[in-house]
Amino acid sequence: KAGVTQTPRYLIKTRGQQVTLSCSPISGHRSVSWYQQTPGQGLQFLFEYFSETQRNKGNFPGRFSGRQFSNSRSEMNVSTLELGDSALYLCASSKVGPGTRAGDEQFFGPGTRLTVL
Amino acid sequence: DAKTTQPPSMDCAEGRAANLPCNHSTISGNEYVYWYRQIHSQGPQYIIHGLKNNETNEMASLIITEDRKSSTLILPHATLRDTAVYYCIARSAGGTSYGKLTFGQGTILTVHP
Image 1 (cartoon, rainbow over the protein chains, first blue to last red):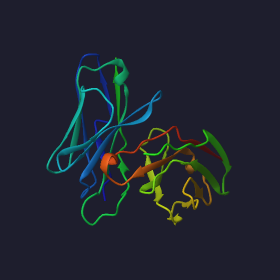
Image 2: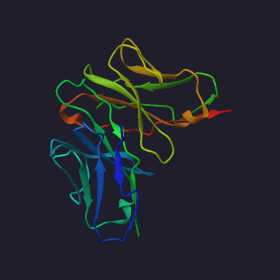
Image 3: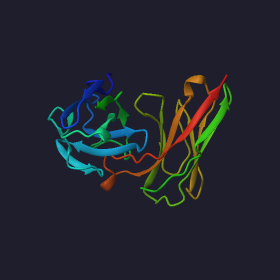
Image 4: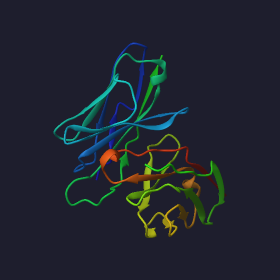
């Protein structure tokens, strides 16, 4: 079974630009969560999508947005990039849904390393 | 989600058991205890989770105290590849916790030859 895939793996942008990152969950998984990891703040939750709807959101500015498609693939977008947006962006998928156990685990992808110059 | 407290670092000899403690004294009755680990530059990896009973899988054992205020993750025979940051997370199954894991600073476990 293929794991969570994220593209691209590395990205370099300049301040003011925008960026779109992609995440393909494990087949059959309907929930996709996004996280930002920086040396200073650690791993922080951005948002979660389930059945094309955002169900939960972390404490990030509106420049960070996301969406989910009918095949459960997800994208996140960061507009007007700032130097502080340089980070490892991780997505995770989980099964969730009727018949699954409460508290199903999340499976993480390898991440996209974004550098803002 | 309840706050968790972990020691910042621990060492373990290869082949010995690694016992990683976690304090979650304000955990509520519907919150699970999860453990994840992150090996350098990779995405976090799920290890195990439990509610109130002790749990064991092929990777580790989770011991939760009877009052649920603390837990211990046990790696029975640590190897060099177990060197990683280990995160203990308290999380409810739904509601405002949908899809959300709240990571603390974790414990850096270093396994020595």
